[in-house]
Length: 242
Image 1: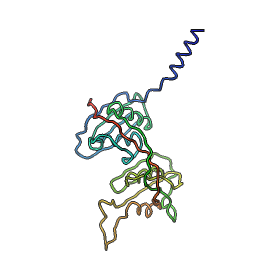
Image 2 (image 1 turned 90 degrees about the horizontal axis):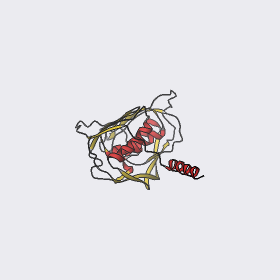
Image 3 (image 1 turned 60 degrees about the horizontal axis):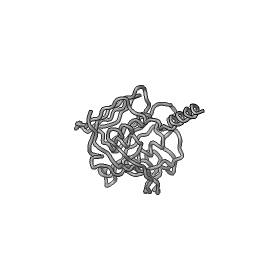
């Protein structure tokens, strides 16, 4: 009887142990000396490469948030740039790679953060009067996005992803309230506020982003109060290079 009880206690202890956080098999981190300005995050099954990105950008990618959703942290959070290369033991998809990146940031940057929900003034993306000016892409395929400071093109983009892209461009929360499903091929060009388009007879030749959404896509932004999730950075340290 005692042996049976002991076995049950051992089994209970094993089941009670939390699962280990997913982690890369090998990872290299170093301060970036790339002065070209090129940066980005690239993945293939089982491999992650971060080129010339800040810790803030890494948090954004790992947790799927925008820059305005990150609060606190050291003074170098946005300014110091890093190069990261990390591999898994076998082929791994992007969702799992992002979980592994979270573990890497905690282990190597000693990143500690918590989530808060805060009220904010934002926008809802809705269908404009007259309806959509784009058609759904009925051909299944991978999604892709290419963007610059005042334009982007995308293949097989959902309305939810479009709202996130607009949110990033505006630096304010934007939620998808279109009620439209499916994926779309999108091309959008606008005039950034900090660099107004050249004018002809005092009329701007390129619309603002809200105007471009309505004129080019048949969508509009509707001001709303929203609840926004914020990641508060409690602690972070510069990593020791490999």
